[in-house]
Length: 196
Picture 1 (cartoon, rainbow, N blue to C red):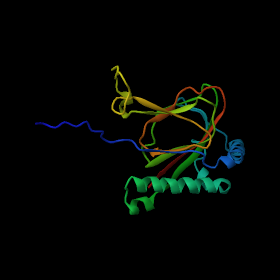
Picture 2: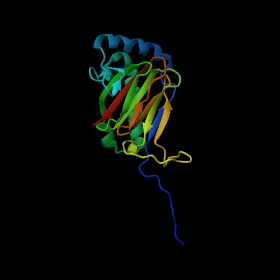
Picture 3: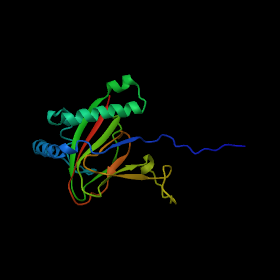
């Protein structure tokens, strides 16, 4: 008698932490808005948000939010440890970039990944209701118009996760993600990449 199994190859890990430094959100927001006044911001056709990404990506060096960058760094190490990466590899990991985006109604981030790094993530300081980050199946760019009866881990094309103040998301850098048109209200998010 033959055996048959349905396997889930190459699953995509994601860490979601809630209520991270919620008592410091007001302070962080004020600090970031001061930084925006100093550095300015830039928008691109695919990154339609006010972003410091093309201007200043060393936010992790700022002493005012060292408590946050240290926390994220440690959580990234924990994430890699849980994925069973070698200690020597994890010890080489460092921040590549950390920047922030401020967005409003109808702003968006086109689906993208940070494949040149190892761990990426986002920390939400402020977000309107019903705003979400979307994670896409890696075959997103391939035409696929197949209808499904019930979305599941084998056929789902995308997954939405709420953007909520105090939430920290961390994922492997080659994970495809983006933000669809934002509902009314301001969103402030710190993004980061870590790698060798």
